Image (cartoon, rainbow, N blue to C red; front, side, top):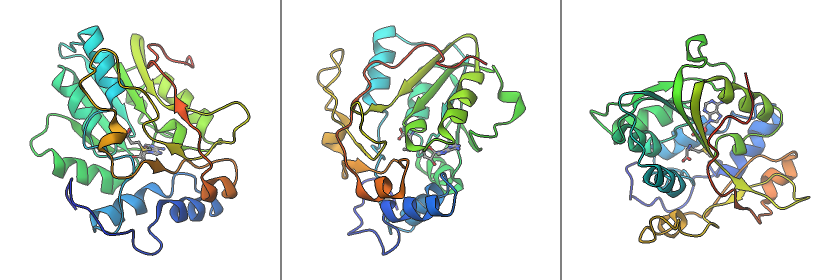
Length: 242
Ligand SMILES: C[S@@+](CC[C@H](N)C(=O)[O-])C[C@H]1O[C@@H](n2cnc3c(N)ncnc32)[C@H](O)[C@@H]1O
């Protein structure tokens, strides 16, 4: 299915909440991404976080820094359908973008034919050894927050290890209130970026404002309490050292 087309409703069994619950009960916290992207490919589901555009926090940060990759290497973690990766490539980086879902990677390649981005299927929890400290810029947008713990801590450590010495890590995530159980994010609670006030927040352009984030329990995954708030500025250094 192409960007802009509207499926009427998810096919029975292809709703993200059900896919999450099924994967968690099978002990496979990342096992719901591939079936969701595969269903979306057939027009039977919507990928709720698909903005069809780079995340505004990423573009605001890059604009403010006048980011210029100058051919340096960047890694986009959990790249989904590729909008952030394409944006970073457009700012002069040699970009490798990966996702655990083969359907997502196929869709990204289809969406951006002739792209300079190297799209690969890979698992953040078992990345190729050659990626260690290999990237001057690493962008992680809403992948860690979509994982329960475990394996969230391992995912954070893995991301930190891929940043080259002196490199930059950008993390985009939603925050939750103190005491609130991990749960689905409500996209776009964030204000428009000050540096590009003309750009509407992503959620105003989105078809679906909610998407699931597996919590500590199946109830959280299925129940979706949500009062998520934006994490604010992308961070510019790894939270976890190698
Ligand atoms: C919530 S989506 C965010 C996608 C994209 N970064 C964005 O901001 O639109 C999380 C993405 O991470 C991918 N993902 C989840 N676990 C992963 C893993 N272990 N390794 C690689 N990708 C993973 C999913 O397939 C999905 O595309």
